Image (cartoon, rainbow, N blue to C red):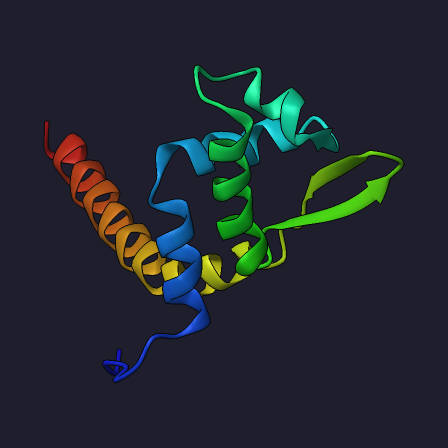
Length: 113
């Protein structure tokens, strides 16, 4: 795999997901759109802190927002996760090949017992 000389969109998605609170926010948004306050209530942190995490997730396209009255609702937009799936695919193929070879070896060993 060629080395990239500058940051790619995949790098930005990985960076956004590096923080455990951001990963947890995405998991919470699997249940559907929520306000920043509803999300903040899940943590022992102030709403502005959660808003900063949401800002990072919005910047890479993992979270969308819409205004409804006085509230902003945040929702999961999973399309950028496809970048990660594409990046991980060669590694998945590598491990599938290794596991397949191991299974074949074990099958051969069991025939000799």
